[in-house]
Amino acid sequence: MHIEEKQLKDFILDSGLVSRADLTLAEKEGLEKGVSLGKVLVSKGKLSEDDLRRMQAYILGIPFVDLKGEKLPFEVLSLIPEPIARNHNIVAFKKTDSSLEVAMLDTEDLTAIDFIKKKVGLRILPRLTDADSVKSAILQYQKSLKAEFGDLIAKEVSSLELNPLKRSEGDENEVITTTEDLKKMADDVPVVRIVDTLLKHAILQNASDIHIEPQELELLVRYRIDGLLHDAMLLPKNVGASIAARIKVLAMLKLDEKRLPQDGRFKIDMNGEKVSFRVSTLPTYYGEKTVMRLLRENVSGFTLESLGFHGVGLERIHRAVQSTTGMILATGPTGSGKTTTLYTILDILNTVDVNISTIEDPIEYQMKRINQTQVRPEIGLTFANGLRTLVRQDPDIIMVGEIRDNETANLAINASLTGHVVLSTLHTNSAAGAVPRLIDMKVEPFLIVSTVNVIIAQRLIRKLGDGKEKYFLTKAELLTLGKRVNLDKVLATLKEEKIVGQSDVWEQVPFWRLKKNVSSEDGFSGRIGIHEILKVSLPIKDIILKDGTSDAIQKQAESEGMLTMFEDGIFKAVQGVTTIEEVLRVISE
Image 1 (tube, rainbow, N blue to C red):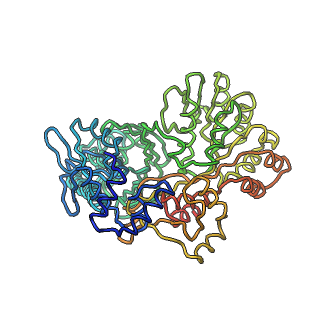
Image 2 (cartoon, rainbow, N blue to C red):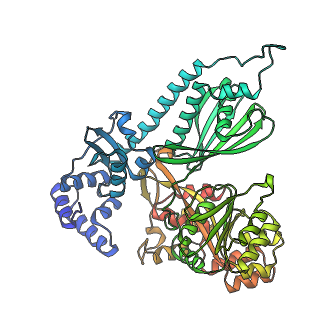
Image 3 (spheres, one colour):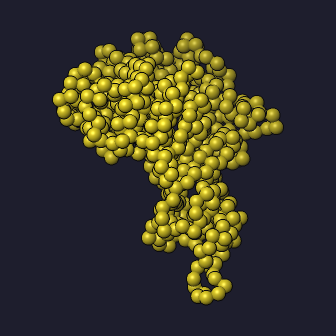
């Protein structure tokens, strides 16, 4: 399926779309940079991506399909889950008894083809298409799901009683709140269907959280997708109590307790994908608010590179991972991907010759051959008590979900001093800020320098999809950006990792943004980390022992080559992974 460069060159010349002079220059640049001729022509605007794909389709003898404006049968479209369709730019559009035709931007994406073949059990027939066709088809997922969701809600809500249940005796206006009646409400068939559809919709939308919020006149359902909340559905106010009761039944919470917050968990299996839901309820002015965090259990296969680590920072983590003692700390706010980073490091460390134990709250992902313990403060199993026991379980590697207090901090430090690798998280805004945070927890500076190897700070940014275009910053824009980041250091890193040419200057370095006709919702898909990786070097150890500030530590770390999160964001903006605006949004939050 590979196209020879000469084949493509000859075909482009015959087509007359590009002049011979432009083609010769592009060919020369491609040889210098090790980039294909087609990519150079597209980057220079001599060919559109769609023109290039049509040519590739003709040369390869693969049919080209145009799906723009085509209404696809939802039962065929939904054979490929929306997250797979989005991430791999592949959609199903025609099905027979023995085969499934799929439209793709890259027919060499064998991983996606193999996944779909195993899922549907049919012969897969790849067809090339253009970006607008894929975008049009993917939009139909949401329209079809919303229509399906709305129709079901309208049907099921209408079958529910509009008035609350009344007591048979006493005050006629007093609402029944017995456990038995709440259980009856939760098991009502329309309520079960509404909640099941709500959960299914969230999984297909690749949401990370579901918010069910009672308002004065309605019940608002919102999904967090790629870090941002989106309104998903407005429901009648009268179904709020029934939906809350149904979710409590699933999470095995107390049905009649509405005055105190509750936490629980349940699991569902949808199309072979196991998803856990972490449930939290909270009393609010208009009723109980419910938030569910979605945790997909089949998360193996992450690599540090796929999480956004690269270059010197990646090497620092690998060196720390190879050590047999010491601490690796991940810092950042809630929802910044710290736990995923630590799980990925654990996956690297998880070999047959080591014993790994964790103490977590909650256990977000279940991993084979790792002994995972859930914190239960109500019965005395705190991080500190659990960690004390873990040390007596002959572990080689320990992960502490979060260092929250003085006792846990000191126990974790002592565990790393006595021959264990310890991984944990802290809530600080930067890597350098982890040191004063530990000192604030009564950890002695000499213990910090003896144990902590690497500190990782991170945030999550949204990734650009196909609806992007290249542009260049003006001198004024570069001057403004240079006031916030060390552009010389970023450019040196880009050259070192061969993202740009060795002779390039900033005026020649392209950035990326959404095309004018592409919305933010459609233009971004998935998230990736921006990081700063602080190695506790000898000079930094001296600063810590002399009670240096986090600013002094930060300054020294940057002088030793550490990219700040903002600088790493600019690096990824040049790569075409994200936009400068997205980096600014996340860093300034």
